Length: 640
Image 1 (tube, rainbow, N blue to C red):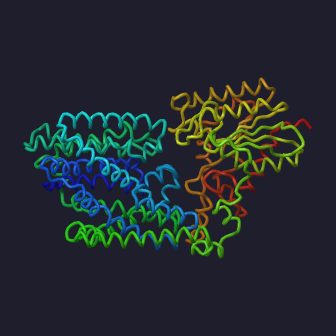
Image 2: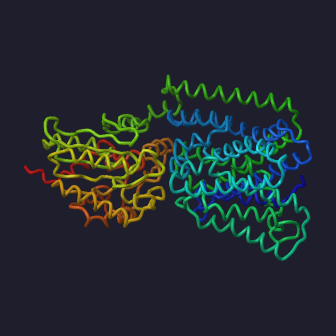
């Protein structure tokens, strides 16, 4: 296959935005589309080889996978093994366990499934996962398990059958992707069925160029290749982590990449831009740069804290490129060009043993003697017992014994045990975090209540969280049914993140994306139902949401000897709760919390006495759940 320097330049256009996006550089909010550019490039290059060799009758599935192993495994194992000592010394036990699980998943190219089940790509905690970015490698390798076999079956049947089959697969995958961004966004982002169409764009480019190998520079080719550049570059700057993705939103970058592959040939303006020495140089090390940047960023944040990352972002980017250059010349290039099959197999077998050994040690230590983990030993010597408790997520809230797992719902009584409940608390995990304090205050006031908690499922009738399979309209329908059975309810407290419920891309009502108008109407329906029962509805305003989990930030702050605890400005918090305040006239009572969480200027995560207000990003500690409950009870008419 003839070398095309512009393809390496295109790789630069893919990897640099991804790195800048992960570094949090503001203008590059859509830099994640670089992964989609990589998918199309990969589809083009690999399918070109497969189709050519099948056409010539010399394709070998074993030789194909040998080439893939040479390309992917040496650098990947090198980076994984380089991560091991940093993970051992810098990660807390829970994070060390997660890292060990990711080592296993990456080794078998199923990390996309692991990260899909664990969390979303755009969540703040995701940025702390050193191997999160390997999900895209897993998608590619899963694709290349299927694609060569599929082509071996289809090509003897003729080109027409090949094209019809590939077009059908492309359309089905794209439709699934578009449906999935609103119904199963996390699975759609991470899994092959909704990503396969992107690689097929590259396949179609390969098929076209095989039939039309000759190229003559024309004005049309110049315009189309420049259009391709624009289609890639514009989304980098206009997309954000709120953009539903991939689906149709991935079409500009993938079509743009296809246009460049087809038309940015020798002599075109796009070719001259992409084939410059700096673009080609970075493109050559793009795979290693992609591998290195996420571990470098994540381990820095674990050790020194996310708050310090911004000051060192460009230095860490430079370090990633330096490491990439080293691993390209020392690892990638030798294994691809000069290592024998025997050397490759023995080296990769040795790496596999080392990774398996590290995984075993990490998991065994965490499960059997987690206090032996160096970072935990340090925490025991330098951090308060309360901080350690919240780092471990141990006894952080009061949970209910009665659970309906298929609905993601738990419920229980709180307060006085020998009375009928007169207070109902209905909400998501914010309500769950408040339950301890509500129980204590209910005991003090001699009243009983019933709590209904559905984590990740804001308390709005008909709401569906597509990122959480247990949060459907049936969840809160069950809550209403249970509340109807309570004969003496006087007050229903709604405690949940309603601002997010009005705006999040993964929230639907009857298949329709959420909006303030929809949420307002559904809250009104619930209020009417409760009024029919003779109960008042009181909405409790949500608290601040911090950029990083507070307990983790505090341990990093102590360890790195920097002074700044997390804060949010009062003005930002007021802006955050403004959508919820728009519901104040719908309910019977509205409890504002900005004065509870904030002083005149800011909303600190640590109070003046050094106590945590919030322990993760947005859930109150047990201590503050009692203070919040006291605020809530001051607004209740208990009839005494």
